[in-house]
Length: 267
Image (tube, rainbow, N blue to C red):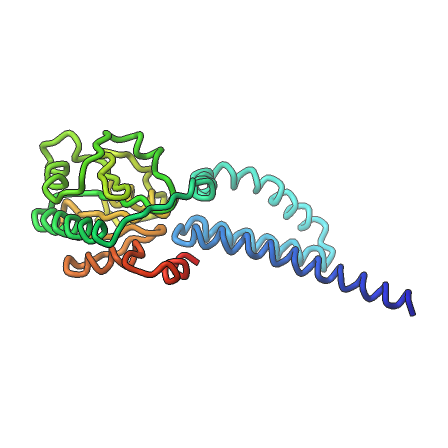
């Protein structure tokens, strides 16, 4: 009787261990796929790996030695090939995981002031088809990118954005980064995305997507060719009508929400 109980307990422990092991593997795969779901190259990679694993299973079941050797060779050298070919994506994943978490404390009055000035500036830039790139730092530090630009540390004013992005100024290329209630720098450089984009999107859009893939920053892009306003968030580019810009920023920055609601959004 005791031996039977011990056997059942041992079996249960082994089953639980296997289940936990599988759940952890699937969770890691889910995180990786979620972070790179916008990148078609990465999705094609996962499909290819899945096909190879299925082939490996078939060769084991049917006892196909020659085919099994070929699949094993592909798996062995495939890991090296993946590291080389997908080095930018792997670097982006590690950068995103290693970013320092920050806390920003702005009053509702400060947030309202920022929104008024930003919406006014972006609307004017859009109407005059002046290219612009404006990034909000959120919970992940942008200090590495701030250091690539020209330090300003100025109050957020609509007129200042129009001056910075005027084509005659040396700061019009690159991004303006906003931290708390300050413009901390201009002409910052962002790594461009590796996504396959339509030719209608230029360097600013590629840079906006690039920073959104490795951080949780929210970036406003104004097209120089069309005046179209877009938001780059989590590796996605969303076109925003001028009249909806304020509401979109409030939603994406999680402003004017209770602490409980904000915590739910980040989960």
